[in-house]
Image (cartoon, rainbow, N blue to C red; front, side, top):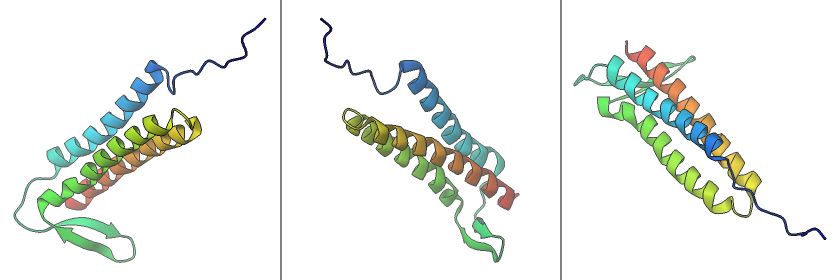
Length: 120
């Protein structure tokens, strides 16, 4: 007679989880490295945000450039912890959290590239 108890698989295989975390880390570190390498420090206010309709609408200190990658790091840590906490019971929610984390990190990378273009 077959055992009717379901065997719970882990949320992600080690390879998939490693690939996801490596991709997120590369996007986050890439954003920081791009900002460090291509935007020279200056004592003057620099553009931090721009829109097509208005142009530059927010400027500030050089250090504020790194708030975007810092936000990405905070979201990475919080969403990963939440995914592994709720992933025991709600696998779909954990997958959505980790997928959104990856998507947000790619947006952070795009924002860093845009900030470089504004400041060159």
